[in-house]
Each structure stands twice: as structure tokens, then as C-alpha cells.
Length: 257
Image (cartoon, rainbow, N blue to C red):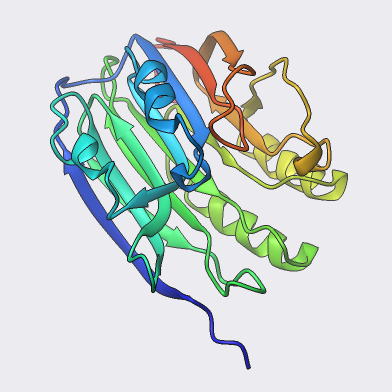
């Protein structure tokens, strides 16, 4: 039996402090799988992409690294990280991380039932709720990295768990992340559940990648929000995923959705 070099570490850590009291009406978002910050130039690209962002959703984010001070001492964003595992040799922790200029009034994480087959690591979901500029409404943000190298049934089990996080929220929703939808069966199932929650996928022009089997893995779904603009930063090479910038606007319907 081969012993994994990764130690399971399913927990939450909160860093930094937010500067705003409520989100909206305009919300600038960055979505990016940062590939464990392993590629040269990641920090420089991240600082540029972060400019004026209200929400930052990262997958394969890390902790216990030289980059920690950026998040720990932030006076712009509150950072919440759902940690999945720790490298036994380097002590670096990995997971999903959400940054916001508004402090979350509620948050929780959820871990996939099944593990990746070789590393034996779990995949994470981080749900955060933020007050909006609209009366008696709040924004649910779900940042998720869906399990990858498993059967469809195990993939389906994790997707079901992701959508369970949406069940009791009546207001606007932003659901985004690396969903590992590298075949049509996976994507169709995800879209079926998204439709049942009245979520619409944000359409964007992007460049398929060979290492993603020429399929799009990163997705953004919204409910109760107006999409103003979306841009894929295809010139950024410091990860195996392209960063995505999104401009949203809150919609005052008079009543909660």
C-alpha cells in the first residue's frame, strides 16, 4: 500500500479584515484556480488582477507559504479559507479561499464524500453570505472545487452536496469555481441542477486548453444579479487556468427571490 504524502485537514481559517458594510450595487469579482501558486509570476499577476475587486474566489489556494502575509495583514478584504489537506513534507495547506471587501455574516464549508484516487485528498466547498445594499437581502457566494478523477456517480455525489448549500437561501446567489466538467455528461448534470435553482450560467469567450481536454472547467452561475461584463485573461500564464473577471450589479426587485 502506497502511503499518501498528504494529510487530511478539513477546517476553516479567517484572515484579514473587510472595509465595507454591505455589498453592491456594483460587485467586481475575480475567479481563479491558482494552481497552488507554483508558477513563476503568480504573485505579480494576482496583485494586478485583485485591483478594485469586491469578491475573489480562489481554488487550489495555499496557506503556510511566503504569500501568507498578503492575506493575514489585509485591511481591504476578509479572507476565509476552507482547508482540505496539508503536504506532509512542505506543511503547505491547500483548499478554496474567498476574499471579500464585506465581512461574511455567515459561512460554512463542506467536504466531498469521496477522495481523489491517488492523492486520497478531498475537494472543498466554501459558502459565505454577505449583506447587500438592498433591504433585507443577502448574497450567497459558493466557491467550490469539484472532485475530478473519479466515476460519474462519485462526481454526481459531490455536485449534489454543492447544491445542498443553496437550498435554504432565498436571495441572490453567485456559484463559481473549478467544476471539472471535462465531459458532456458531467456538464449536463451540473446544468440540470443549476436550472432547478433558477441559476443562469455566465457566458464568456475563452480559449480551450489541451490539459483540460479542450473543455471548460471554470464556470460562473448567478441568480438575482445582472451581469454587466465578463473577461477571461487569456494572456495570464502563471496558472494552468485562466483568471476570469466579472462585473455584476444587484437587482432591486422589491421582494426577495
